[in-house]
Amino acid sequence: MKAFYKNNNGLIESKEWTPNCWINIECPTSEEKKYLLEELQVPEEFYNDIEDIDERPRIEVENGWTLIIIRIPVSTNNVKLPFNTIPVGVVFKGEICVTISFYKTEMLSDFVIYTQRKNKDIKDYFDLVLKLLLSSSVWYLKYLKQVNQKIKLAEENLEQSIKNEELQALLQIEK
Image 1 (cartoon, rainbow, N blue to C red):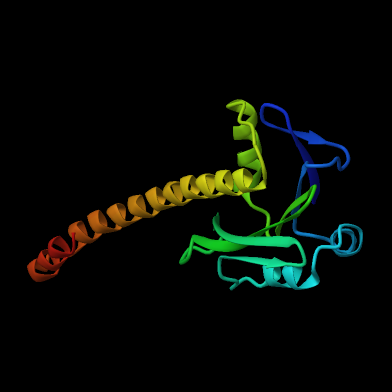
Image 2: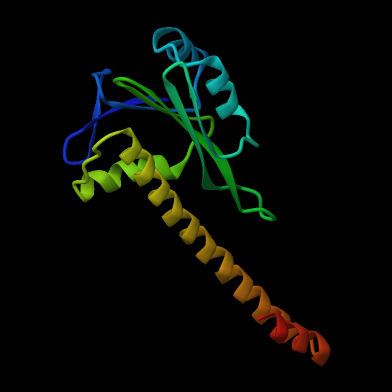
């Protein structure tokens, strides 16, 4: 999915690219890959690095292009591992700024709504990256709160079902 956003007291979706707008691409199709690599001329190595699920956060500069990879939290359908992180790449040069994610995320759409609701201006590409990092940290805390609630519920269930005093003492020490 490809979306264009202009900065106007919050991010407003646009039908086409204009200079200095933000292009957000989630789950790129082969057509969107062609758009990135051929029309925008994003380095293919950057595209391939973002596609790697295990890619580490970093900053890289090549031929005037800047790549910033951040990892953002996402919820999963896996009961044993309800949350995970994915790489999101922010690639920019001159008047072009693109975020690329190979997974659908709640965070990026929520980020757009937040900028509109709070009338947040984005001054430049680095400001966008910092605001994305801030949004990411809010989502990390949201998911951490859910994990803590599950731990507390499991501890309460364990206390009720097991009468072994040593195990309960160990649980208290861990707290």
